[in-house]
Image 1: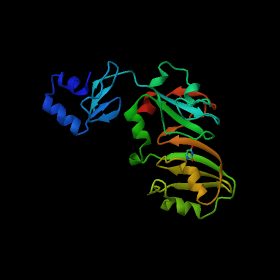
Image 2: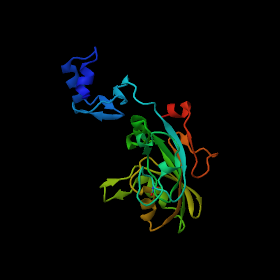
Image 3: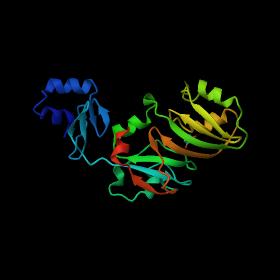
Image 4: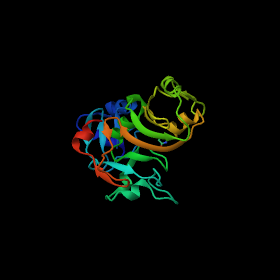
Length: 230
Ligand code: URA
């Protein structure tokens, strides 16, 4: 059914109010804002206005996976195994990845069908730190931390990266905390100094920490406390 009809059928809104709600971008279907009156509401779609849930939709699911090297952060790939191949759950087509990792990057990956929750986790506006353990080919110089804190200009996107925090752990290893997830961001930041990243592992996304009990390739459902943190 069209979303405008779905909303007008409810006792609380007339047609003009529905038009306004859509125009003000207050309506979300499966976590995605829509202003299009023709958007489709299905039996299992979740429909929300502001913080009110009008139709529950499918049960929300949230998983943390320890991504191993050698699999792609995609739901489908013609050549390589994907992170979804590691998940043994029904209705996998509903799931999406919150914050991709490169083929050889390991660590915390969140997989969910909860669109608004995952957006809060990944959007730069919420400034949740994503924390990476990094190893590099060359020594990490003392000037890196200042440069990362000041931000680096990424010509392709025409933007300057948000302040990032670098903690040196050894001559060629560090912990880096960034609040965005630009394409190959960490590698490009070290690439600024012509220093190749040889190992990259995501330890944390905001308050969600990779469970040390999970071996590479293993996953578990988030508990209600973890879900409530975002
Ligand atoms: N930055 C990168 O360069 N690669 C990742 O996988 C994650 C962050």
